[in-house]
Length: 112
Length: 112
Image (cartoon, rainbow over all chains, first blue to last red):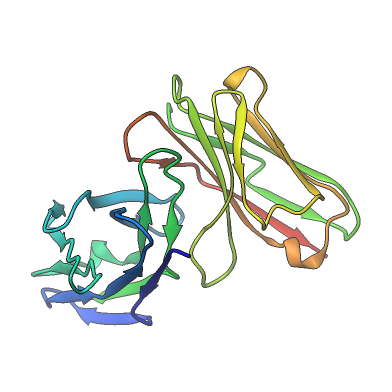
C-alpha cells in the first residue's frame, strides 16, 4: 500500500539556520504530494503541494520538489524564523477520492 | 469564522459509553473526511463523504464506529461502547474538487 516516511524528530535549530526535513514515499501510482503544518493550538494547514514529477511547490519561503526517481519530497527553507516552530506533515493523495496518507510528522523548534 | 468547525473540542468519557462528534464544513464544500490522530503520529484516514454519500471507509472504522452526513451538510461520527484505544484526536476536513483539504481544530477524546 501507499505510505509516507519522514525524518525522525524533534528538530531544533537556531533562527536563520537552513532547514531540511526529509520525506520519502511509497506509492502504487502517481500521487500528488503535500506538506501540511500544524502550529501550536491550531488545525492542520496546507503549506505547499506538487502534483507531478519535477514540480516545485513553494510558500512562505518553504520549497519542496517532487522527485520521482528518488520518491522524495524534502521540505527546505533557507532561513528559518521562530514563528516556523510547528509540526510538519508530509502527505500524498490521488485524484478522485483524494484521501490523504500522512507521514508521522516532524516537530520543529526554532530558538532565537 | 467560515472555517471548518468541530464540536465538542474535548470529550472525556468512561469506557463503554457512546460518544458523538460533529463537524460543520465550509459552506459549499461537497467533500468531507474524518481522520484519527494519535499522539506522535500523523492523521489516519477513517471515512469520506461526497455530499451525503459515504464513498469510502477505512479498515480502521470498526463496527463500533458510524458516520453520517445527512443532506450533505454537517457530519457526525459516533463511537459506540468506547474503549481506551479509541482515545485520540478526531479530525474533520472538507474540500471541493481541488486537491486542498481544510482541516478543523479536532475533537480530543479521552476514554477513562
